[in-house]
Length: 367
Image 1 (cartoon, rainbow, N blue to C red):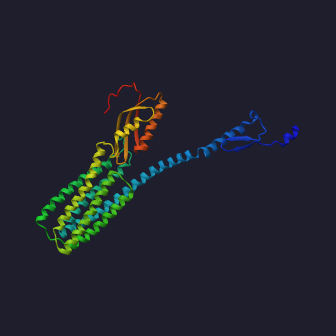
Image 2: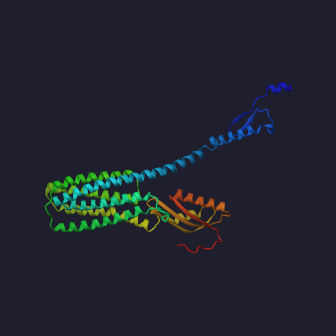
Image 3: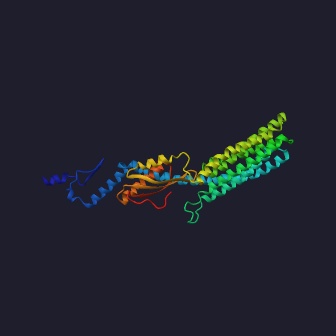
């Protein structure tokens, strides 16, 4: 009987993989199962656990990694596209600026001359933006701990100031022309105005298509859009001159151009100054942010909190947090949780967090 039982027993162990790992119909006593079999079983269990039990987390981790890599790749491609668009814009506007200035002088149109002056600032603004865009991705020496991320902001500030200067010059010339309007060649104004509108729309489309939302590129885009509106005003004034011969419309169109430039430049200057003054991003409630961090586990209170931007969309924070964490490992977990909260809820890319126990003295230098 013993021989028959042995003959009817299976020659090897059968492993069933379900919600758990089991051994069925195994002829060996658990104490006598070969270690090799147990190692294989453990490996199978590990693979099965990741394949089924942890499928979703693994997918999320892979997705997060892919998104992180894609994010850096997308940011790089966006920056490169903006650099190309700015370079092409410089060439287009430089060539057409000369054409428009000559046509404005020939036809006697202040609208064309003011638009050519604005286009001169466009060339300077686009060149400055292109230069800043090229430098922002370069690795500087170690003394520039944040890199050259502020260069585009400086470019946006200079662009905004130059726009204001153009507004003043155009308005002064327009006021003088109201009293003494020269003869204007409406046909020349119309042709050059249409060509200028095409050039500006092409440049604006390329900058918008790059997807770069930095202050630097926004400033260049506002320059181009304001110039496009100036071309529209020049075309409309040419049509009025050709149809009814009313030449004061040229000075009126120039004032309209100046007003449009002013409206475009004020928000740009405001945003650039906010960043340079290290103001918290517009729309971010600092008090609510502090309260949300106070509500995190093991956080007693936030002592110091600073939030600012390196460039538009690149938010940085530093915090001194009083914590009840009892060990370095627990403190690291608290800091990681705060950092994740700031990223997920407030889109803060970089946060420096100092954790201090409740009985620690106040820092000597803080503001």
